[in-house]
Length: 309
Image 1: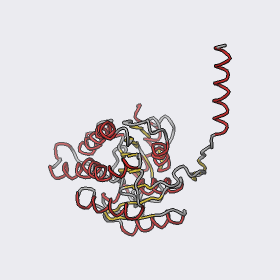
Image 2: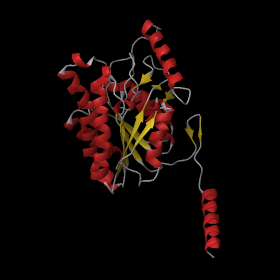
Image 3: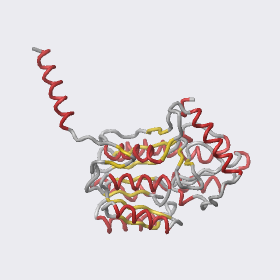
Image 4: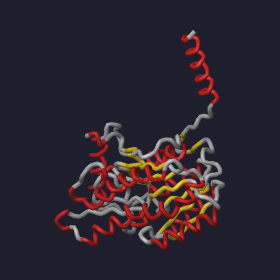
């Protein structure tokens, strides 16, 4: 009798699995509207990883707002691409270091969308300095954006996220898990964000789930500065790249050649046999946006196994 009951359970499970809609990724085009009716905010969403995340979530059916600090033209372009997918889009100026600026940006998003279901804290800065030469200003500037910024945005968005039974995804880094001597302020700020993710998960439960995506070496096509932190690199692009230095010339320089060689070395060290790309990271964010709300307080490393070495 018990065996027969177990067989019925298995049959029911098979029926559920066969009836469930499949989500497929083909050339990063998402085939179902997993986020239809949802409103998303991606900070630092004008370029690079932030742009990839914003477009992926829009492809999944969400209306998407992005923030920018200096990249106004790129933000307008990304917002136009979101709108071209048939979604509502909004580009709001925001300095995530400023309490008043964050408050104004959240108000603008709510005025535009009427709700907020998902927050992706992507805006960040990256720097390289020998630890013994690191200044207090460099230390504080990194923590202001990478750690205080996500705290301020999450705190301001929280009432709206609670109403929507929403989600927060913080963008961490492999650097928050592995120490790099030349990037101590960056590594420390991301390690703090990983811990903040866990604290938020406990504090905001059960209404809001909070998780973290930690990219490793990520190469972004079409950018002169073509890698995201991640892994220390002399010409890193910045997650939420608005907050980093401006793009450099697209001409191939000696620094570019060194970067290419370094990228090849890291690909050789990676068990999956290649460096990551923006779609790898964006789809990890999508998982936390659409997966079980019960999952909270977790950090998902997107590095192809590089951190295992």
